[in-house]
Image (cartoon, helix red, strand yellow):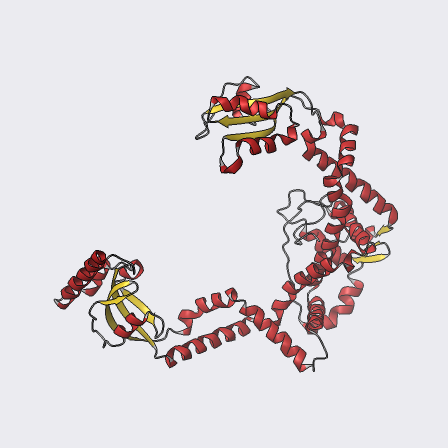
Length: 496
């Protein structure tokens, strides 16, 4: 199946139409129960039937309004939109007749989308908040049971573990000098900013926050917790170098409000929201004696949400139908047009006149080389080679083994596409921007008045052939399936 997101519909069966803006009208259950018969009996009439299947006015309005918002360039009236809507529905019907809805790939993709819409509704913001507070309490309890948190500062004189003796002696001498200066009354923060190689803490005067037992290397930790508040250690050697440590004192565990943004980020990054949903689903299954599966719980929830929110119903239906339509269109139009070479060639020959150009074009390459010898070598390499193989031949001969001898632009160029070709082929006198490292410019190919083969205009032929296949397919669907539109109901769209 093709990955598809329900953000477009109905332009010649394939193109982007409009960004979905889904407005959800939440109805309270009591009001819904009182008004169901009136709202969906008398005021939601059938606007059309397609192959005997009724389509309600509200479904048509949902699709029409979403695809004809103020930002849409090609905005249509309800009457103009009818044919696009019908064509879409006919494609879906053909997909159902082909049993595409029974494919495991379709079921997997649809259920994945459905779950994205439904699963989040099983928990509330309050559930997530409760989980965040639980994580906070556990973290606080763990820290306090491990001796709490401490604040300290250090000045690090960095030293590699395999440093030469001379380097080690220099580092030790500097560390001792800084320690003696501190004993003589120097300010710790100032010396940290000036000498510490721990850049992150140095800018804060050497301060390290939230130190817990077991967090640092043993040499540092042993020296730290041997100090009383305000004391400074002698230079201590660790795998990182020499530390002069100042004990600032015990630190209170941060408040919940302070840590809440970090906790919420942690919840999202670790997928804990999904775990909460799984737990809620498991709880529902267990409470019902395991007489129901999680899948059935999700189905039941979807039915409930669709009763309360008609737009949710149509959103899910739209994705379901859209997946079918995309896959059927791929089989009937897109894949055929892109892969059926014989059909493309036949279409090109039949419509060759429509692909004539008003001005000649250049079929060839503009290339840049480092030596004069390569100018002729390039020409010799591809002289008797079919045009579509040029790139491969040049790459194999000149740019193999990560040695790039040439820079090449290949294609069918019209005037204005390439400055070098404009000058050499079309007689222009423009300044060519040099390619760094490749001082010699050249072109090779020929000027042609019209496409020589289908490959010369392949993209355009594929597009045109797709349009023909689409047109023929729609005509066949219109003949196969009966469509009846109630124009009286159509005239009331968005007016009731």
